[in-house]
Length: 399
Image (tube, rainbow, N blue to C red):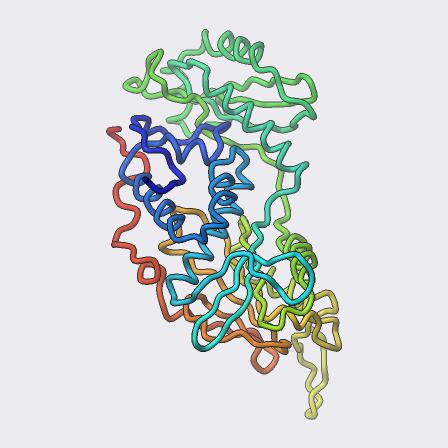
């Protein structure tokens, strides 16, 4: 009998990029190409080593049309494979000394053992629903047959209900029909993209502005299947705040199981535009600031200090000492496992220290400052990946 896999054994012939309204699970299941075959093979391989009792739930979420379910399941699968690959015996949903709730993993080897609880930090339900409404609009507009123009699109205001796009598509077709692509290529050649004609749709609480981008003569034609949406702009500026969701996740997971009697790691995967560790450091140790102090020589200097808003620090003492470490990964997804390395932030004064984890970069407080140490095993070695991996191109030009 063949073992159950995540992906069905089917013939795939569609190499096109993901549609805006297509879930990640549906995309991974249908996209063809060597690059994507490598990713599907890796996920199925990792899944084959997962604890038998965890497989049904993980497989269901990896195949879910809800991207948040897929992201959380893949993060758990990644953690399990990381621990197994580095020599740990892993028990899924182990019994604990107190209560009936169970963390995701217990990892053990001859030297140590510790618990791991995984959490993928996702947008709020409100933000996710609003984002899905915008994606649905993109998906419907990509069905527009626009032989001579790509469309620059800016959703300046999104409504509280899904936008019916049939009238909008008809209006866009009528607007584009009399425009001369050769004339507008001259406008572009003059460096005046702002002078290209625009069209605004304001209805049902939505306000969307379009600009016509002329195609080159060799790219024109009807029924080509080329998606018309080419450039996305006009989004409102937002302040990237990772501290709040990190603290929220820790407040829920950090105290979920009482005294476990072993080191305990909370593993967080977050999708973020932020590229450094400032947010996680602020979330754990408190917002960093500088206070002016006078030295013995009378010189006034700035001295770094942590505010009292940290998960681990209240300004006077260390808190939540049962959480031995917080593992943080940014933008971890299947195609990036060969290059991304999570960081394990260690509690400065834990109830039980966690040690012997060469697979992750570590961050520790030394003499009042956060210092980083690289992992000793790189991802390709840990996961047995060839170079390059994945092989092939994401979307070959001749496909």
